[in-house]
Image (cartoon, rainbow, N blue to C red):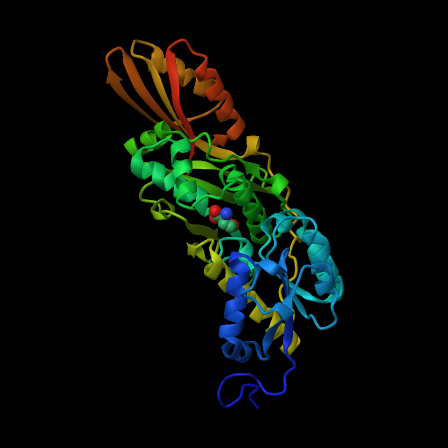
Length: 444
Ligand code: HSE
């Protein structure tokens, strides 16, 4: 017999799933709106009505748009209430959120969270609490907003062997780099404009210095490679040092610059595997799918042995898009409660070690202004050879007694490439190191 009423709305006879929402900003207000406006549809899909039991906010008096009887400033007390089945956390940050979520999970209350910083540091502890009590822990909204990405990694690709997850997971930096590419302007000027237009936060540090993307990379690497990877394991470089010259050098070669999160399974010559997780600016060919992702959009490229190449694209931030991911998780939790199932647990059985950045194979693009005379190219080439770095392509353009020299390497350990660039910068024949950028997205 169907649990759905003839109208296809609220399933008869089911006790409601009661939700405590912590935080009610841009995303939370959209979650509250959709829970109300789509109550009938959501109940039909979940198998029981899903309703708000309370909303914890710092200043209840600042939320006249919400029913006063739902509001509280005491998140800990709301989480502990007997009539709460699920906690939706949209506050962000680590403390005190961590203790609220542990309280919920320890009491068997499932958690839906968008908190990438917390998950990137403490997911092991949260999963252990969830496992001990039989609660669910869902966090689709923590990475790439509306884009269904974590569920495919946790569930759809659970039977495959993922080798790489690479993508644009921060809209603020993508907006800035897209604008620098389009206008030729420098970083500081473009950041100011992005702030003025509301595309960058008043304090853009977490975005432009790569912390936001590094947390997301840790979550992606953990799921893709069934290993515990934390934000501290992720090599992180932001976009503050990307110059107009970098973008110009890229343009000359038919490339552009993106801030990418790159999570790879690296197999050493002896067959041992490790995980590399890094966030840094990258030069990619304009023909690459990620190069066409402009403005504040996100896109993530996944490679797996059997599935081949997959691409996930969409809005990575914003109230309604992120609320879509939260509600999807909420329906999953409700279905599990109604039908007696469990969501996926932590999968960290592979326990692959994290490879230090210096040992991670990368490719470099190096653009130099050099003296235009006999033996200069040989000196530059010798510096690469001395560090065991193989050159893939060299291009020279002359202007008076100076030459512009571009060298693109084959794959080499990142530390060897760094040492090569340090040595080249000291050569008398090198007038200026114009641009140094890692390269992705083309054959090595
Ligand atoms: N601040 C992030 C971005 C959105 O700029 O993409 C939330 O993860």
